[in-house]
Every structure is written in structure tokens, then in C-alpha cells.
Image (cartoon, rainbow, N blue to C red):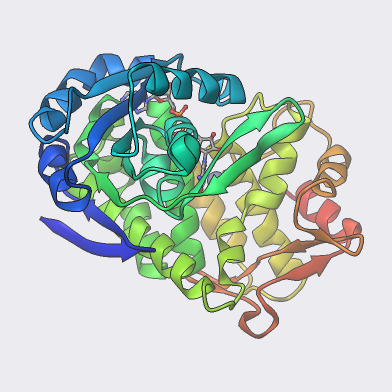
Length: 365
Ligand SMILES: NC(=O)c1ccc[n+]([C@@H]2O[C@H](COP(=O)([O-])OP(=O)(O)OC[C@H]3O[C@@H](n4cnc5c(N)ncnc54)[C@H](O)[C@@H]3O)[C@@H](O)[C@H]2O)c1
Ligand SMILES: [Zn+2]
């Protein structure tokens, strides 16, 4: 068993085939609880029976598998309400443990159910997409979208256990794998040049036949999780470090907004990383060639590195202003200095950039 990581009291266990040991791990971390698995219908059809079988012997009372239709548009208060009502109807009580089995949508939604049901019951995250393994399931953020925007309603609710089985990536659609890979590349840029190089050198294995082999998947997921855990942990000491996880995301979110979320998150982040690295070079924070290195790896991974057809750079710059990170009229960016190193450790990792600089960087793509 690889692993041994923890964050906010959550044990983070990473191992190929770990899904089959879900019951044992629950018995250790949240003993004598009645288990409710929550999954979207798609994931439930592939892994629902396997997960139910794994938890049956340790659940205090018959475990249930609750499902909802897959997709971001179901990450709503409506679905949260329906899932909560099903727990009430099945007479779940204070001894409930919620298991989120799925991607980031399921993790956020089921996590919010766990945060609020009877004012909070234990949560176990079993992430099944690359993005949720290395990002969404780590850090304790849960919540739902509203018509006014994404993730507007939510709560911090730290899981008791995060169980990561990279083997389930075998069934993940290739576009979802690529989308998660953008975040792994980001982790390399912000914290670990060697990891960035490893991803570049192993792209073929990672995407081979559109899926990584066991050893490669384990290594990819393990290192990325270590980086996210380290950053989130250090941030508790108020270093502002968590901001560095936002690299590529200010321009990325703006592109998502301008396209009406018609672009995959990872695609938007890839373009955003290249644009923000160009910005870092323009501001003379980064060494020359950094943006090129990032663009080369993203491109080789099948991620876009230019604005989609018909999207104007000016529109994207305007959209950056509605991002949460704007302060005093200027938008703040977390920018890299070199591969594996972020600039501005002594000023909280935030750089206010002018619209003109951002526009030129995007036009340069
Ligand atoms: N809480 C956080 O800190 C945080 C961080 C990043 C993103 N997020 C959230 O994560 C969400 C995106 O997550 P996502 O990209 O995982 O999307 P997702 O949960 O919608 O999963 C993507 C698709 O893959 C399918 N799927 C999942 N696992 C599979 C598997 N192993 N095999 C086959 N199909 C599988 C799902 O059914 C779905 O159709 C967004 O809502 C975002 O806001 C949260
Ligand atoms: Zn992201």
C-alpha cells in the first residue's frame, strides 16, 4: 500500500485496486456507521455494485446506493435536496457515513450533503476522475452551483478518508483524462520541475490507448496529490500559498465564461496557463521560454494552447474582472518564476496586472 498522506484529519490512501478495500478502510476510519454511497448514474452503473459489495459487511445497517443524473448541470440545490430527502426517507440517522463515489461533481454534491445532513456526518471521498483524485477530493471544499454562478453555495467539510484507486481511470473517457492532466501539468509548474519533466516524458504511457497503465497512473496521481496536500497545508500558516493553485485559472475561468462553459475546464486551464506564463515573462518575473515549455507539453497532451475560434482577447480580459480574485480594480495573478517555482513568496504570491498587459499576453497566444 502506497500512501500515508493526511490533511485536516483526512487519511489519504492511494493504491491500485484500493476500491476493493473500501469496507476495511471505512471500518478503520468511521467504524459502526451506516453507509450511504452517492454516485452519478454513469459511475453507479460501472462501480456501484463493486462498491456496495465492498462496504456491505462493515455498514451498520443495509447500505444504500443513491444516484443522480451525471453532469455539472445536476450539481444543484435541487439534487442536494433530493439526495437528502432519500436519506431521511431511508431513516438514516446520526450514525450515517456518506461515501462520494465519482468525479468532482459527485464529490462536491455528496460532500455538501454530508456537511449539512443532521448538521454534518462523516464523509469518505472515493474520487474516480483524474481531476477529482488530484484536485476536487483534496482540500475539503464542497458545494453546489446556482443559476447565478458556479460553487456559490457550499461549506468546508473535511473527509475522514480519501481513498484513491488509480485503476478506475481505465474506464474514464479520454477527454476527461486529458482535462485532469491539465491540473497535473499545473502541479508540475507550480511546485516540481522534475514532475513536469516526468509528465512530458511519459505522455505516451499516460495517454496510451487513451489510458495509463497501473504503475504510471499511480505515480501520476501520487505526486500530484502530494503537491496539492503540501500547498493546502502550508497555506494554513497564512502564507497565501493556496493562491498558486489558481495558476492558469484566472484567464481559464474567463475563457469558460466567455464561451458559456462550452469548453472543457482542462482545455481552458491549459490556454490560461500559457497566457499567464506569457504574462509572467512580460512582467519580467519569469525566465524567457517558460510559456513555450508549458505550451509544448500541453500541446503534446492534446490540450489546446490558443483561444478557441471566435473568442476575442478583449472579451476574455473583461471577463477576468468578474473573477473572485480582483482587488482594487486590478486582477491578481499567481505567476511562475520558473518551472517548479512560483514568483512572489514574499508578497503573498499575488501580482496585480494591468488590462493592457493581460490583453497583450492573450493576443500573443
Ligand atoms: N472541491 C474542489 O476543491 C474542486 C476542485 C476542482 C473542481 N471541482 C469541481 O469538480 C467538478 C468537475 O469534476 P469532474 O471533472 O470529475 O467531473 P464529473 O464529476 O462530472 O465527471 C466527469 C464525467 O466522468 C464520468 N466518470 C467519472 N468517473 C469515471 C470513471 N472512472 N469511468 C468512467 N466514467 C467516469 C462521470 O459520470 C461524468 O460523466 C466541477 O463541478 C468543479 O467545480 C471541485
Ligand atoms: Zn482547475
